[in-house]
Image 1 (cartoon, one colour):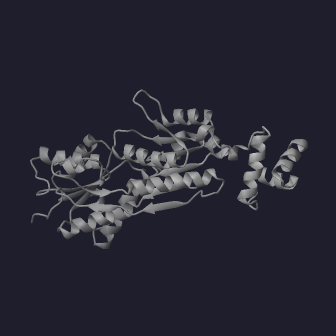
Image 2 (image 1 turned 120 degrees about the vertical axis):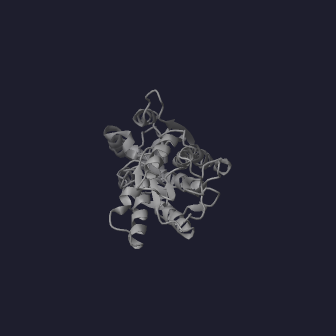
Image 3 (image 1 turned 45 degrees about the horizontal axis):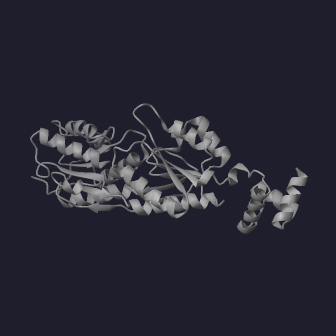
Length: 337
């Protein structure tokens, strides 16, 4: 071992002690020195420590829950473009109907010595405890976009869900709405929890009786049918809302469908706001008012954060929030008195 390290030190033009500090990832080592030592390892045919392995052909896994929600393909397209510009090769990994899960993909990615992984609308925890532990031990760079559940210590890039709800509430309030309901994703889903937090804070600021908001909120899945069923509950006698804020455009389309089945007009009887500004929302009936995610900015930040980690710079635990934009169309209107 000493002979091998001496050869590396000689090739890199540094001391034996410096080589040992590089291999131990000592923070005092300059990046230029670290690169020289790692290059020496490569040239002399020695394996790099796991933390500094570059990955086979710069493969980067893009893990998404599904491709049915249009926001996921939009993120995949933008993230992929950013990675390719940096000389990296994206590999799409999405859950399938025949049982291929995130954990299956994580195993395949690690078997191929992946250079990094970006989880989009998913969670680092989806890898499962065994693979999550191995990802940590191997020091594989990870970035989460709009994380699905809490993952402290992992680099995260997200839309500001609280700001999105504040924008939606301000818009509806300007139209005279006070009975505003919410259709959110499952309990424990981080983006939905952040949206709910902003909604509850709004209720408290406006003197709503503590806990009364619970009758105006439904947690569900993210399909159109989930949105229809949730909205039917929120339009039941004794609960009736005049406006709804939904956690996705699909849920909002389900809300519009529920209103139509009940003989209600959108926005005359019910105003509806979606989230994402998916393609074709301008062509729905009525065109959907929604909150637009800054997909390109978030994707670019995620790709850059991954590249930074791959270069040996620690950015773990940081989270960057991006401001969304309210897009007003025809699915919202003044409340009827």
